[in-house]
Amino acid sequence: MEVNDKDLQHEGLDSEEGLRAEYANLNSKDDVWDVDAEDENQLRIDLLEELENGKTDFEIKNFEAILNKQLGIFPEGKYDFVGDLKDAYKSSLSTSTEAKIFNNIPSHAFWDIKTPQQNKNIIRMNRYNPFRGREFDNFFEMRDSEEYIHRQHVKNNINDSISTHRRY
Image 1 (spheres, one colour):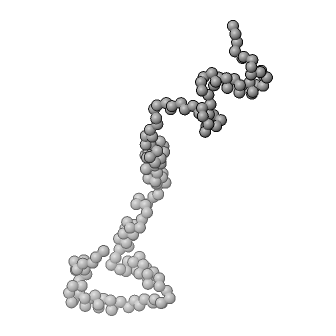
Image 2 (image 1 turned 135 degrees about the vertical axis):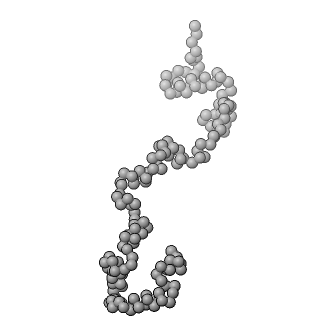
Image 3 (image 1 turned 60 degrees about the horizontal axis):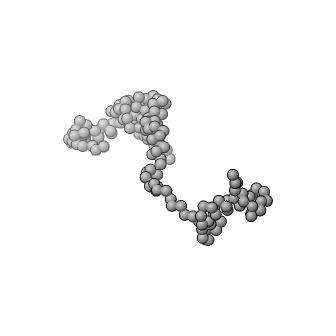
């Protein structure tokens, strides 16, 4: 806040006579304020007492209005709990739960990862030792091997020279 010469013209401080009258007014007051160096708040308390008693040119209502405007928390003077909660959670309530979840997931998670659309080539390899060659040369060897493994598991003790194929 700046004070200009225009603001002080009504006080009469721009003329010699006005300054002499102000000096005489201040000398005529016999109020001596007793302020100890130890009591720093005494001057402030005395100024506030003069302001409340109306001994100054200022009105206390103007000070209260300025203080309420600058330092007041609630403009209407009443605290509204529900309104405060609505204001606090306004942004989170305006978005849906799905939107909140998708906002937390990074965008690279939605990049289209290409997967091959063709079937993989069947590579015949040895199940028991992939470094060896093929396990079977043809379909019949494969079936014979499976039958052998099944018989070993079941333990039915059929001799390998006996045919397991039925004759009709």
